[in-house]
Image (cartoon, rainbow, N blue to C red; front, side, top):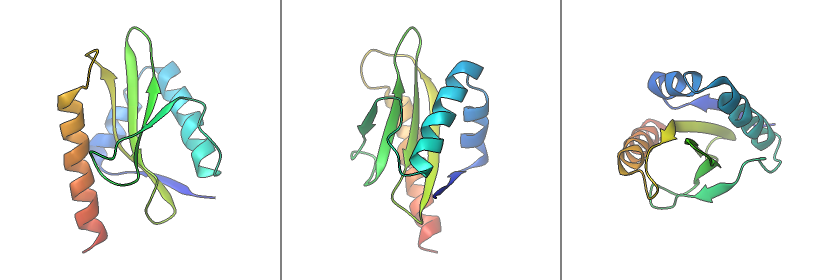
Length: 110
């Protein structure tokens, strides 16, 4: 069974500040992933951020996303969780995820 972690205190705070219903759904998804099962929510690979980066999606008004890495150290690492504010790509959210992925990779190699 895989573990799960947050890439930073900010990533953990974002996740904990999601609405309870959304947080519970993402938590079920992460638990399934840790048990090598498919998540219940739709997923989308985000190779533009990095290899192994995946987005969990909850659509609706509003929509929510949880971006994680499933590729390293037998651990699901959450990079960023947020309320989606646009119909297209949420560029500010993607920039946060890219920065956290870069920092995560640097910690892995130090």
